[in-house]
Image (cartoon, rainbow, N blue to C red; front, side, top):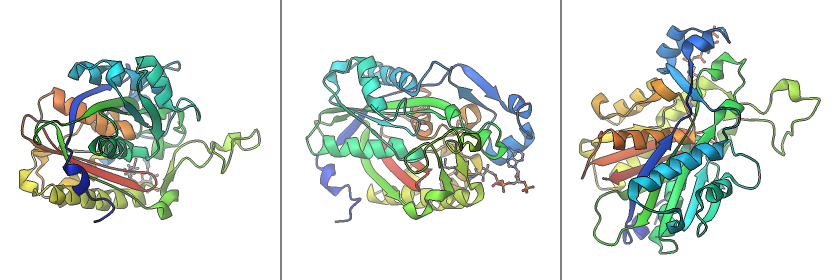
Length: 339
Ligand code: COA
């Protein structure tokens, strides 16, 4: 059996029973960015598809956004915080290095019966968290899991670097997963895939601020604790890996591209999204896009998009929905859900 196989936990089906999301109020438009760096609305829209992104208030942390998204997810399925056994938070912008952001969120929610930990898989984090939760629930170790992806990327963006600062924004998304008691049905996670290629760690990274290169008075001016990306190369890997990961879960779920009613890709670049859909032979009207409103919110992007697509009725009962992501690491992940 392949390491990534879903065969074992298909016997104990896992369902998504609720979703939620939250974005901060403040909008940073392309016109605003034109005043900050040498860029233009035309360049940003043509090269990325982004029109504006949300920026959290100085006193609004990753955990605050994650808590709001989690509360909405719990409301959507009628569960109480005490019902949660497990909280997994995916983030690259934790409130603090330690304790984990999940512990702050557990406290804010009052989810006193939950074990809580963070995972770090950059933009792929939400689906890494989903796969982890599916394993805990599918093997009978936990009954109810809350997975959250939350990012305050505005704190790790170099606002003087036009090649990255136009891309990113803040926000959070969440989902509640539970063991399914009966047959595979509404919300079932049919297949998941995760993968990594650490040999390409330098394509997209925050090189400083950790144990490898701590921020010091001497290097502070170099802004090493901000996002650095080799955009062009990252773009190529994103298309290849997202296509392969999505194709693998579609196949493992026993489906073909024609059976997919909606694909929700990581929102990093509209050109990447279109290229992936085209390579999967999934037509444009079956592709969910909200990048124009929020930019790239890393782990939160696919979680916010999933919640928005559900609430706006972009998919309904019995539909097969594919989620697919790609991020720093490199990491990639995908899931098929039968709603
Ligand atoms: N405004 C105007 N010009 C800009 C600019 C901006 N904000 N940012 C870069 N440019 C310029 C560059 O300086 C370069 O100019 P030059 O040709 O004179 O050197 C030119 O635009 C083209 O740069 P390039 O990096 O080749 O652009 P691109 O078409 O690859 O688009 C990205 C850049 C970042 C939008 C794109 O590469 C991308 O989306 N990469 C992948 C992101 C991703 O997948 N992330 C996933 C993990 S989060």
